[in-house]
Image (cartoon, one colour):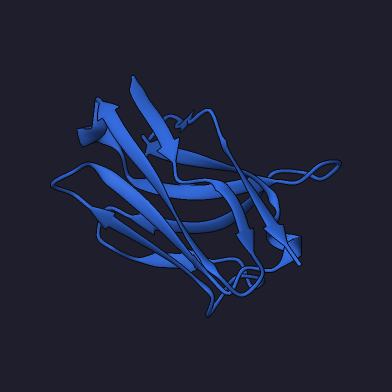
Length: 119
């Protein structure tokens, strides 16, 4: 099992900055990728950014150039640096850890942290 604990959410003004953290514990040696997802009221959960164990990253088009995902392997922590957030970035942000085996994929989730961007 993998446990994920997010922190860093809150209220931020549009154009400001905010950093989310996700601390992983448990069987983290088996994780292939980690990412941040978000879910706004009435909308489906969507991928924001992801980083693989070899450091490759990918981003949703809506956040490219504004958000940066990074990892500190020594601290087993993944970060999401949110620069120039917009009101439409308001959502609950969830940390995800993914394990991929030849048989199936395992997804682990944090409890979520609210991000509210004021205009």
